[in-house]
Structures are given as structure tokens and as C-alpha cells.
Image 1 (cartoon, rainbow, N blue to C red):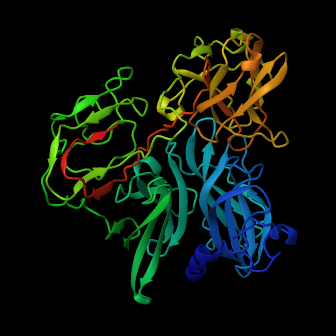
Image 2 (cartoon, rainbow, N blue to C red; image 1 turned 45 degrees about the vertical axis):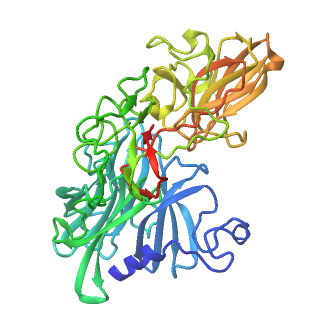
Image 3 (cartoon, helix red, strand yellow; image 1 turned 180 degrees about the vertical axis):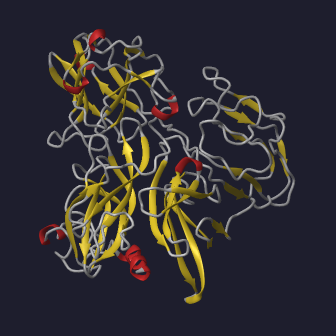
Length: 569
């Protein structure tokens, strides 16, 4: 059983090497951009494989799936089966989402001992252990569903969730039967705490906390999708080690998401790793110019006068700023951390002059990699812009009360207080969002009339970038005499950027802004703020939220001879 299970991990996502052998039809397999070696559903969006298991002559592949669109959203479990790991048949959605619960990642076990009571003698149930995400609260908890007909239909356990900490970052359970302890074992992550928690259960329904592992090694992004398994060392069955896999997002060496693994021992309760990096390597030998252990010692610090004391503050910071992902890899007790005030403040630090009398300069640096891009601006708001519409309405005042016209599910709504400006890019405290009821809300919002008195209009827009009327649009429209004369949309990102329109031809005329949300799938909403009028085109921002990951890099390079200053900003 163990050999088959791990073969499935390696190979279950393979499809036939000949056209027509996967879940999609022969015609579909002949599509020019359709993968021929990797499984893909006939339509819509997929990602994480879940519940890879062998049962009654079939390999089962479950996967994260949006049954209604081609973007992330409506998270459900798709399902496909194979008898040879080459030819796959796509089956109907196994565990569908609902308005109250989305189905995040997890695993499937065959309960051969019928410990759960879901099966019958000689007919064990397949049990899915997955993360429930509840849109109303954002809570993530672990739940069960079971099948007694070879995975063709699934029933959610009436006692769900079976493990709930009240956390919004508790997910991705991997469950297996541990012969050493004689119980089910679950590895599940506390994502932002960089921990894998282990739980034990006799019946899959009730769970007892065993131990935690972490933080350890790479903690630059949240921890996700853990796995724990045993393997022979160099093929020797008498010499075995346990492997704990932890995925990161972001935090990979090359950026983006990635994975790390730890080798060690599992005693039925605790995982003990042999491959934990206990300390950072010592810096290279040479003359120390600045260690940032006391104060800024002669550096010129230019903080943002509108967002003091950020971004640098008055002195080095002792590690991670509250609200920031874990920072690691720095030497000593403190470092220059430009996350003070979150990512919104801007500034610069310039060192005192120093003599270059050796061949290399070395420094530790991490965080954002944001070069200035041509045709963009570093300004949060265009210079000399006149505000036309904003969303700083009094608390509790709806759009209709402020003169807007609303339809559909956007009736009775009001602007929301945004998170840190660095996370959304809005101006002021409030912004317009159409994200309600887990993106199922649709409707329109039409502004009061205003006069176009300058040549250009600019607007902050984010989230959904859907332009296809057939699939449901997420667009912002400029109306003149009731006709749509300009259209903008989002960027499939939670961070807003400027969209600009040349409206010279409409100068002096009355106009309205209309927000249109027709989409109910992934990114099926808009974020909007701060319509402004300008004389020149509004440029997009070159800056984005700085990465708060903890990756560090050592840079070395031969500098030119002479005297230099170092700066950061």
C-alpha cells in the first residue's frame, strides 16, 4: 500500500501519451496548447493535486478546481481516475463548494479498519480530510467527506469541522495511518507561524494535538501543503528516514513559491529533524563599514514627511516589524528595515563617504526588487490632480445616500475601510469594493453627474480584469449622455493602479462613472478609488507592495577605486 501510495504522488498527474486518452475528448486533446503529458480537466481552472490514492483497481486524482471559471475561485475538488497512470477519465466534481464553504486542499485515505464508521464490513469508505474555508469569517478548519461507492459520490460529515482553532491560517491536512502509534496522524500547517502541527486520531473524527515543528530553515513565505513519509536510505530497507516536506509561498530561492524538505525521525508523536540550519554563515573576512547595531551612525536618513516615522524610523529595528512576515538571515540584533509604517512610506538613506581600499563590497539585502520602469511614476497621486470622486463617506452612509444609483447585490452597500495602504494602494481610508458573499454578488453602481473640465481622467482600479461579456465583466465605464465612451478594468491583483483616459473631446460635458460587476468566479469583483482630473495623462505607478519575505542575498562585486557613498531607498 505504501509503495503504491508514493508512486501515485510521483505519477498520478500523468496522462496518456496518445491523443484522446485523458479525461477530455480526442478533439480537446488536439488543442494546440493542451498539455499532452500532464492531466488537465476538459475546461476551467485547476491547481494543487489532492487525495492521491489507490482503491479497488483505480488510481484516484483529486485536485483544486473552479467548476465555473478559468481563474482561482469557487474552490472545489475535481476528480479523475486511471488504471495505469497513463490513461485518465475525468469524473464529475467530487466535493463542490457552496456559498458558505469552499473546499481547500487536503488528502484522502481508505479507512480499511472502518475506524470512522463510515464504511461497512468488507467495504471500507474513502475519507477525504480537507480544509474548509468559510467566506463569512475567513476561518480555516479541517473537515471530512466520505464515499462508499468508489469515490463516485461524496457525503460531508454532519459533525464538520472536526478540527477548528478559529484561525484564518490553518490548512492543508495530510493524513496517514501510523503503524507505530496505531492511529491516524495528521500534518497540517499554521501557515503564518511557519509551523507544521501534528495531530493524532483513533477514528478520523476526534483529534488530539501531538506536537509542532518549526519555524525552521526557509520562512520567507507562508508554509503550506505539508507531507510526512518514510523512505529507505540508498534503497536499504533496514535504514530508513522520515521526510517532512513543507511548501512556501512566496520564499523560493528564485522568487515565487517553492518547497523545502527536512530529513529526520518520527516517533509517532514528534518529528525531529537532522537538517535544520541552526545559524547563518559568518560574514566574509574584511573591514566592517556598518553593522546597524546601535544607531544610523552618520547616515543621512530621509523619511516620508507624510508618513513618519517611516520607512526607516530613527534607528535600526530589532528584527521583524509588527504586521510584517518573518524577517531572518540578518546578523546581530538589528537591521535597516524599511517596513515601518508598512509599505506606504517612501524615503532614502545615504551613507557617509568611505574609502574603497579592497576589491569587493559585500552586504546582506532582502525584501523588494522594484526598479523604476519607464513610463511610470513613483507618485501615489498624480501631481496637480483635482479630485472628482472619492469614497470617504461618513461611516454608515450608503452609496445611494451619497447620490449614487445601485442595482443588484450592490444596493445598500457602503465604502469599506481598506487595510494598510500598501496592501491595496488606495488613497485615504476608504475604497469601493464589490467583493461580497465570496464573489457571488453582482450589480452596478453609477455615480452622480460631474463635469469634465480637464483633458484627462485617472482612476485607481484593481482586482478583476474580466472584459468578456459572455463570461461576466468586471469593468469601470465612463458615461457621457448615457453612452459608454471609455472603459477600464482591473489587473487580477489586490493592489490598485492608475487607469487613465484622454477625455479632451468631452471637455465641458456632464459625465457619470459606472462600476459593473457581472462576474461570480475568481477575481469576480472590483476595487476602485479616487477619480481625479488632470491636464496630462495619468501614469501607472511603478511601485508595488514591497515583498516582506525573509529571503536574503549576498552581493559581491569589484567596485571602482576611490571614494563612495552607499544609499538605500
